[in-house]
Length: 187
Image (tube, rainbow, N blue to C red; front, side):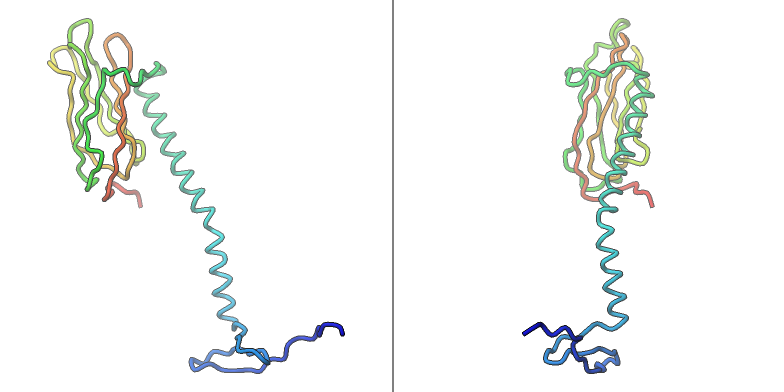
């Protein structure tokens, strides 16, 4: 009463397309041919690459973060950043249809006097190939601490603006922007 350990008996069969397969006796299940086995192996290899794709996305995010940190360090030269101080504001649409030309306006709350004025404003898009979008130099004769421009966005991201005031303080503002049609893509 032991189990039958012999190999199943197979009959050779050629499909209408000329492929050789083997049918197990008593079943209609076909044993894959060499080409089919090769395809299944390749599909398995492709599916196992999924974690590599996720790792690539993580490394892209890490690279974007490193580029942003380098741009902030170059602008601030080690000074601390003041966030949510209310002295800097970004005006940009939260949803942008076309990333090829995105309008942005950055306003700094400053009387622009000799003792209290904005010296520089930088706009950063961390997920763009080059995170520094624009750098503006201002002075007391600028009248208002307000700049506006258009730029390209590679994808949805958090836009940041930094403003260096005459007393050495650096204020930061940020805004989340969703892009439906990306621009300035690499490769």
